Image (tube, helix red, strand yellow):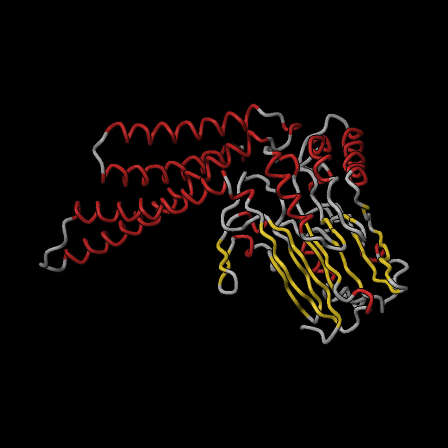
Length: 410
């Protein structure tokens, strides 16, 4: 019953959006061919989405077909929501104007002329997100960006002054469709020539076999001081239905087995010492811990055998772990590396000036570098993509962090 009520509400909302968008189109053109094309595209998009949703078994997880259907829906629906906002606002204004005219003898502007003008503005504004989403699907998901930071710590061992770390996150190999583009992204990672590569989780969407066609690509990643990784929430197989509990257990083992196949040392609530010239730093890796998600991560267990005074780098997939458990921990984790949010794969970023994404209303640390109490977290925007098959304004990221010894930058 709840499903039926939800379906009815969603259908009414979509009808409301489509009605206003179509009225805007009708206001500026009498061409019936254009009007019918508009209607047929809308019908095709909704029909395709419902077909995918109701014919794809839940055991299949989130397929490329579902992602494509979602992409088409958002590409056409979000511009129409913008049209709705403009046209509905104009209706409210016109209502107030009519109310005022009842008590006034003054003349009002031609409603038809003003309606056409407002419709043109609404459609013009809607063209911006429409073009952006099209670009995001066609090219934006492969628009890899290298973001570089330099962090200074007064207790960094001298041997590690200048250590270069490349962080990648959220590969989501089950979403990939273009091998040439992925090879380009992997080459970009290698081009950074970092000392160490750290991967912070979500190697698949749901199933281990999603990575089968990509193992040979990612095993080419190179780092002289090692490659290390942790798990993300999608690596546990929690978002699909399994015929038997044993199938989920086996899949989880298969996901863990992927990491050594591509040359990564998977840390499962464990730590490793990275040594150089008789000095060392501690690398700590927890399983996924997220607010509202799987909380297999055990920070205390992962830190066993580490001294409180050691310089520590923590890999934890979900940045909410840092917010709720790590940043105030008296063990002092100098640098934490996370991913998970993807920056919602859509937003606006003007470096050094402005950035916004709906993701910020869910996560306090949603993209980039944050600093509290002299402790840092970097939230990587992700290498791959999930759910929406594109990126709009929030580009796939390769992070390079150079550690320096000196007065701490707080």
